[in-house]
Image (cartoon, rainbow, N blue to C red):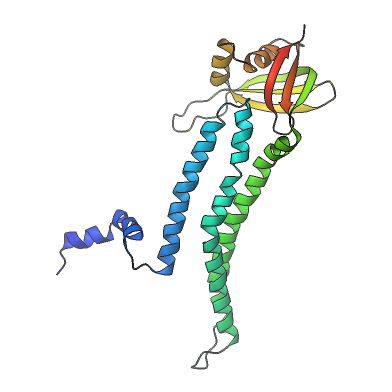
Length: 242
């Protein structure tokens, strides 16, 4: 007979998770759960790599990180679509029972469709949300990859300010950001929100193009030239106009 401690060990959350990866006798639901858990780890690791690659906001590596980010919705599709497919099959089975009577002559009620409909709606909504977010955030990098950089000779900075309203997660204090807009002589413009402390370190070290852009924003009316990816606003080069 199993003791109380044995029973507690078997029902502990950690042991339940271990069972998903050690047991050979898993139900279809458990196998899908295991697949989703693996997917979460893989996607988190992939996103972390993309963030490290594109940590500098104004380099070609930011473009490469944006392009690499296209792998995220593909991974979500691979790891989450089985859940959507299972929800669709569940709905189809319940709907069939509502139409075709069982061997006992009974049919399922319309209300029995509610649970599978909700399951399908929630699982499909998660897939749609990732697809929409990916389209919104990653499309500019794809457009820049296709079009390349553009050179602008007369660019000015306007609405330069320091925003201290962004709260640093977990520390409870404001994280200041530089907020500004670069405008070229032909009317093209790009809005930026960049972490102040990070930018200040680059400016103090004289790193380009950060130093040139921030110095121009601090000097009212100063004009600079830039080479930029026009859709994402990723600046590759910047120089002062004499």
